Image 1 (cartoon, helix red, strand yellow):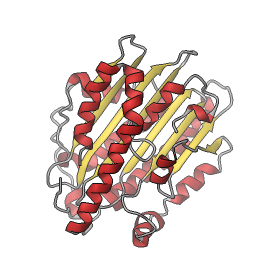
Image 2: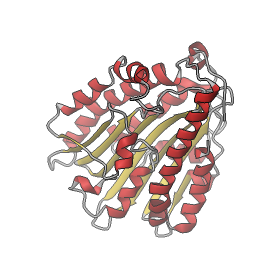
Image 3: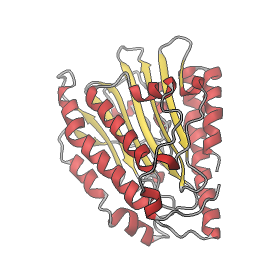
Length: 325
């Protein structure tokens, strides 16, 4: 739910307030820690997630309202991310009423999963979510997302993934490694994380499918926060009950999403980056501005409309604790 559109998944939730039309693209949304050695970051360690058996966490991993191929992709992405870092992630401490919540009419419900990184880790936190909302015109809107945030000990890009479906035949995919430094001022950053990793080939591969069209957010701020290799696409298939869409998810979105996550894990999250004190200060300021903007332009308005002010405030207060740099 929150990380989307290069700020954080909850940005996609803004589409819920204008989701009366599913056939148009406009119905979609517009602590300093020491550096880690690559071997330490990526070593196999025993998972200490004490909440793994909790009912609320199980609820998050159920992804109960999406298709088989969509659910399979989300489960693989979440398990890959958590297994890679394992004991570098603290157990989830979200209260049950924030891990899963709904509005009073029971027409919208969501699940939130956040795990902070250990103090010695370059991981700030990972966040996953799903949102299901019944549409007034019939059908439903389903949003699933996963994101990884790094702290100021590592200036590499973050990871953002989100899938938004308003019908079996319409889907928006947001997949990006949003930069945390200005690319014009830091050409080596562009070279290291975007050119040398050949990230753009994944966007190019998707663009060859006839059902795939570019998606443009109505927010210029969101557009400026994206990387030059961002995948922002709208996919619409024939009215075949979603059979072709399932093929596209399984044969194209699944491998591409996993490859991009792999690049982020190998070349960003587990990279050894030397970040001086002055650069850390700048990084923390930039991260803080973007996270605050996420809450300002998206969560603060979309959550109350979707879940009501009481539930929205409860969830937002918890999210703000993690967004604070």
